[in-house]
Structure formats: structure tokens, C-alpha cells
Image 1 (cartoon, rainbow, N blue to C red):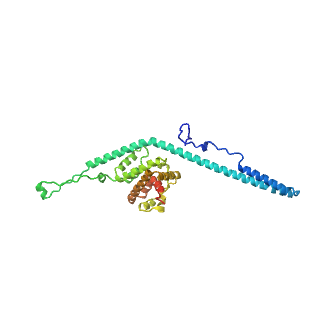
Image 2: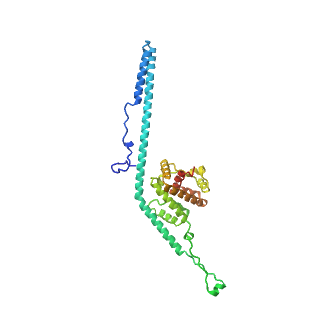
Image 3: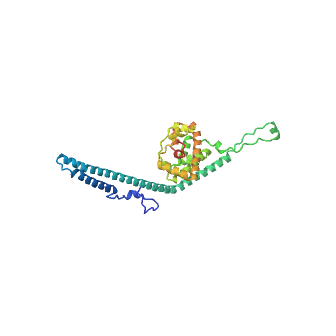
Length: 330
């Protein structure tokens, strides 16, 4: 990450703790206390140990040790206390710098998202509009004519049986394959990801899948406002059997492995947004309900490889993050 420049961007916070090293006073209260204790001890030692008796030889050495050893211990303790104090100050300064860097990174990501989001949103709107037109066209031309069945009365009167019209478009549309379904839940990688947009277009033609995709897109957009992107998260991947237990109704600690998001800052930012923003909270609960319904229908026919691939999509990572914040795995 490049070094922030306050002159180029006045709104970006500058982590002053990194560039301006704080100066520590040469003499602190610790040294003053140590000097005072040393002077007091020397006076007491001279008065009570040196002056009363005149000792020679080994007795003189013992007296010196008795006089100066406590002084040395006092200064050792004083040095340790000062080092401990400096470490605490450095730790606080480093934490402040990390917070400032995090804030600068969030602002940078928000600006990048604001520049990229219009193009992606426009492309998604075009896909949704095309899907709507396709569904309307299918509903218009999919009316099937049944062969008229005549009985004797109808032959005599010349009446014909009525036609069955209005077959829903989703009833005649081919079902989504597992690969396309999983690819759609991961969303296009870039604006040039043709396969991703094709999968997303097909997914939007399926009513239930479209509801999940829309709910996922809503929460991903809201999370990006906090500088949280699924590509930046590296969750602990859960085993397929844990996904199966969740799909079969298990909750709490039995499926705690699904909450594999360990990024503390993302968890803290998401939890704070959940408490403060009712719109965000409603979008999260709606998304979690849609994901629950999806996994219940997806799991019976899915292989272990399919469940592993599903767990690595952006939609599944959003579920891991939001489910952990919402207490699904507690």
C-alpha cells in the first residue's frame, strides 16, 4: 500500500503515529525516584555500616557489596520500568497508526467502488431488463394448442373444446445446471467476464434463484460501503457434511464451522452496522432466509464437490460473515 499524502488528498486521514516518532524525556519520574532511593540508601549505609566500624580486607569488600548492591538493584528495576512504559506507549502509537491506515483503506476502497459500481450496476440493470423481456416473450409465445377433442354432441353442433393458455414461463424454461447456478452465485469477476454474465442472466430467469441473487447483491453492495469485499476474506472452508447438517436443520455449535470468517475488523464493522442501520439489518435477515431456502433445496441433489464449490462463492462468504454476526452459529 502506497504511503498516504495529505497534500494530495485532504480527506484521507494521515497515520501520524508512523511518520512522527514521539520523543521521550531523558529523565522521567522513574529516574527521579531511583536517584532519591539511591541517595537515601547511600546515606543510611554510610551512617550505619561504614562509620561505626573500620573494617579491612574481606570485611571492606562485604561492606561495599552491602552498600552498592541495593543501589544496583534499584537502577535495574528503574530501567525495567522505563522500558515497560516505552513499550506501552509504542503499542498505543502502533494501534493508532493501524486504525488510521484502516480508515484510509476504507476510504480508498469506497472511492474505487464508487468509480466501478456505475458500470457494473448498469450492466446488471441491462441483464435484468433483458431477462424481463425474455420472460415476457416466452409467456407470449409459449401458449400451446391442444388437439380438440370432440364427442358426438360437439360433432353435431360444430362446437370445439377450449384451448389451454397461459403456461408460466418458468414451467417451460430448462432448469439451471449446478455449474451455472454456482457460477451465478459468485457473480461476474469483471465487466469482461462473459461467462459470468451469461450465468447471471440465466439465473435471473429462474424466479427463486433471482430472488437469492438480488438479496445477495443488496447485502454485498451495503457491505462494500463499509469497505468489506468478499474477495478480501479468506474463510476457513467447512466440510461438505457440515453444509448437509445445516441444510437438514442443524443450528448452533453443530454447524459452527460454517462461520469461518476470522477477520475481526470486518466482523466488528458488520456488527456495528447491524445495530445502527435498520435497513441493513432487514436486508441481512432477508438474505439469510433466502440462503436457508436455497441450501435446503440444493443439498439433496448436490455432490460433495458441488457443496465445496458453493461454499467458495461470494454469496456463501457473505452468508458466513452475516450468519456469524447474526448469531446463526452460536
